[in-house]
Image (cartoon, rainbow, N blue to C red; front, side, top):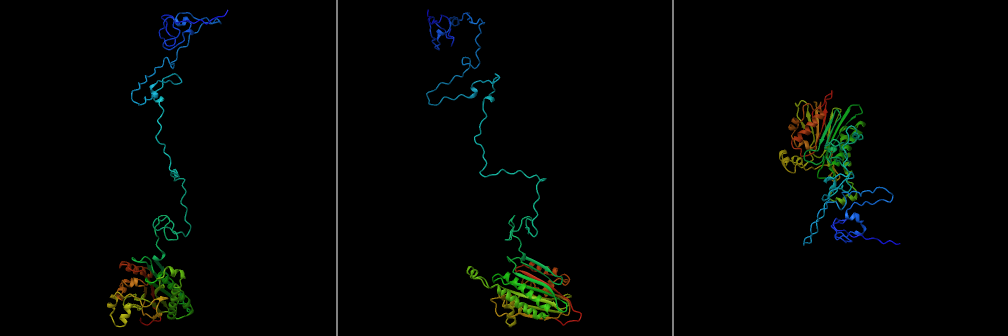
Amino acid sequence: MSQMHQQTAGAAGSTCPGCEEPLEAGDLFCGACGYDLSAQPVGAADGGDHPTIAINGAAPQAPPAPRASDASSADWPVAPDVDSSDMPVPAHLPTDLPGTDSAGGELSVDAQVAPAEPDEYPLPAPGARPEPEPADPRTALPEPTPPAGTKLCVACRSGRVDPDGYCENCGHAQPRERDHMEQELGAVAAVSDRGLRHHRNEDAFAISSAALPDGSPAVVAIVCDGVSSATRPDEASLAASRAANESLLDALPRGTHPQQAMHDAILSASEAVNALAAEPTQAREHAPHQNAPACTLVGSIVAGGLLVVGWVGDSRAYWVPDDRSGPTVRLTEDDSWAAQMVAAGLMNEAEAYADERAHAITGWLGADAYELEPHTASFKPDRAGVVVVCTDGLWNYAEGVEEMARAVPADSAERPLHSAQVLVGHALDGGGHDNVTVAILPFRVMPQGAGSA
């Protein structure tokens, strides 16, 4: 016989097994939650003690206890009502609900809240490299030793000097070689300085010694002063001093008379300066107002008891005796406007040299010079002394022979380099308005005697 499904209605006084809402007799579904009461055994619904017997004869098992996370036992917060404004309902925070960890314990508030994210993550600048850590001084390698001959900066003492004359490390301009020059050859010495006003040294000198055919020494000093109004005066003075010195070193050992050798040396110096005027056409196009390089020259030879001087221009030579018992003598005459006025009897020396045209030269070495007339003279001093060969950078501050005698140290014959240094310092102390060059040649009296100066 077929069996029909028996529907059990709720009994009076029972509660819904789903929501525990009171039931009335004959309810097939819970009025509160809609629970299907027909699927619930009557005994379960009415709460009676009617255990179901398992078909395998085992004792009935009690239903599992509800867990704390079940929906029926969770303490849910009440959602706020939505008001008439269109503002959204506030969101719930993670701390609004209690939580448990894997062991069943309660979570702390800090554990439930994730760490805050930073607003921005700092990024390194494009192409930036991290700063290197300071080197350990115990393992740092020493600075490499610069190659031999490398010039080091006079300011920082560590940077190398580039070909343009500036330090590669600190950029300091280095002193040029010709700003201050000193040389000593035992029996002759010379010093040249840029001075305090000029941006470069346009003076030059050459000193040397040679042996005459009889074996006696011949000492030479050449001093040149570049004409500032001419083009490349520094090159002119250097070329003239070198050419004159080489000419003398060639002529004197061959037995040429010192005065003739001096005359020929001045001509050689003139040719060297004239050669500087032969510039490429392109140079003239870029600087059409250039003129020929030019300079003055004064030289002296001490050989065989003879004192020879030669000059062109206004550089000078002075004779200063050691004991100062004899007179100090100027051995040259200037090729200048003032000297011409005095020679012509138009002015006395004081008036001529007080004129603004006094130092305008009337003779020089250069391609645009007038007819060249080298001046030479020979003397035989009767006592020991020194020859002072100098540019106007010195004698402008010791123009008279008495002033020059006072400026020259008493021990110049024994210390020519020191004497030249003192005289250059005298000019610098006086103002240093021009380049200063001084050469000192000691003169010793020959045993056989000599004439007067």
